Length: 362
Image (cartoon, one colour):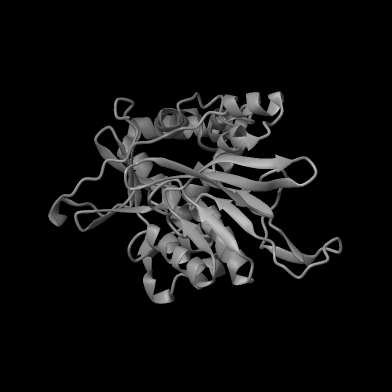
């Protein structure tokens, strides 16, 4: 038999997984059968469906169980009254060749639209370009405030914050304290529900990449040279014709055509495991037409979970260690509410996203 080792950001119950590569299928000498490992996958979001797609593409059986009635997770596209709504604006842009190839392998080229990026910040009644563009930002702030911001930035370059391990110090070092307070502090804290002094700097580095006030000025003066080096400044991106959910709806169809199964409204209640074998089965709960719950046990050679780590740890049977359970319960997640508005096209706006920094708007 062959054993699948996967190096993506989802958890394999009972085993550790790290890195970012494609699936690797290798021979396992301890096996004396030609049967292929059956894998149970928890969650039909991008991670779970990608795992199922890659497994079934190589001829390995995979069963996906999704607790909701729609695939895609937070990248789903909901339908109501003939309209399709994205619950989050998920653009398709990556510098990782394998990921880009996978997207275009799942979704036909004709179903991808190349869209111009336009994002702005609404602050004090004015719209500022985002990522920040020096001329636009300083012009909208006015001469006096612009001078103060440049002075603040200059001071930060001469006397950078000693502690740049957290969001506030990292951003201040690159934009100055004044621009940090205006454009980064309020929005970040209301979105994440915590002080910027508590957010790790690596999160800022991922979201803002190599952008700084100096970089924004250089990019404004010579956009052809600087913009491609700063991921935050991309001018266009791919977007599925009918929203990001289209990608995962298509992936679901292909998984099924390749012999896999994707079962909706199926909640994985427990993951049975042993220290020696790892996960070996799951208990799945579904409901009949009358709403009555039904449980069944599904055996598995491997279990891949794309659910929150806290949910996976608490579902393990026998239970995980007391230390692991305590750590799982201590994890915090930030939920969000999406309100979809249907308005006449003439009242629309060209932006992909508008960031509202006013603290009162939550």
